[in-house]
Length: 465
Image (cartoon, rainbow, N blue to C red; front, side, top):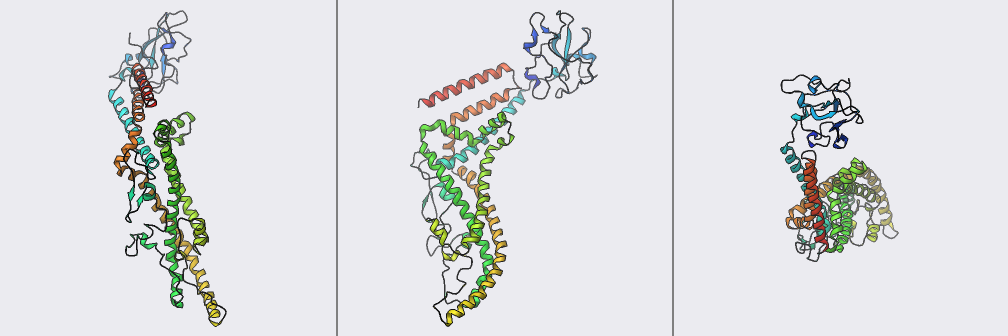
């Protein structure tokens, strides 16, 4: 008699159906077979179908009609297959434990063998996915661990940048500069020019000049159409960096305050940043969208950029275009000069009552009429500038979040080494999960037990540090 194949045998893999196939618990010890209490269809049922492909099972298991029948009676004819290829090696008995009949599978299951290459491929793929998740999580955690200038005990020394003006900056201030009066928005000194494209945004030297003639003022009105593009691009980039920088700075400062003793909490944070926790939650809550956990974090930051763009457009059109006083009073850190108003140095100043004052009022009325015409075009160019600023910030965000940590390879690997024992466990679990369906259940159980012991040992060592 053929060796029994029970429904928990890894030979089924993930492709072959196990419907109605008996398990070890269905076997009656006295007769070493299955009694009628186990519901199983007959091989002659119209809905039951056989296949010649060992990798395809249209149905599960069935029982032949009489003890004289074999699986060969019902399966399609083939030169490469016989009835034994479908026989699972378990008999079906009547109530008295007599009249044994063979149980067949719908696929030539005995032609399907466990393939070690499949296990190796699955293991390597799982390990590769874990490594990718670890790298993504390390890139995120880099900004928590090194976002603000630390005190030198972070694993790779005091991490800081020095910009072209010899200012010492943390990673966040370097990647998301949010001071409009400092580099790169303004030059370090009067002799140093700004790099492209920041040289297009510098209007700090545009002060009021009462001696400008009417023609020059008139030309400034229509040159404001291009200026609206530059201002909206500048403000979109600046306020986006201001929002993201403020959030990351707060999170980084709180993360650094936790210290090395909070290794358990930091590992939980790391699991969230890798997205593994989201994958587990997706499995048990049946919410498939949670599988995109790592992408969700960057998605939220991009949505913050979109919000910043629309908020900037409103702030610019209704406030910053016309004067920076309200902004300067609200935000003490970065002052905006009058040169950054849309129609700076266009209107005449009204002098004390007199003939010149009347002339200036009349000229201003004419200029305001043309300002209204120019302003209608500024809506379009300003919106275009905001869109380009948004695209710039999205590309910059992806570069900053993922490329900058990898370029600082020492600190990047320091983040990974902080979670070395957790990563080891994650890799071991991935191998155990790959063994399911490819290796015998006993081997999978042994591997799972070894991983459990590893988890207990690693946890004990970290608690006693």
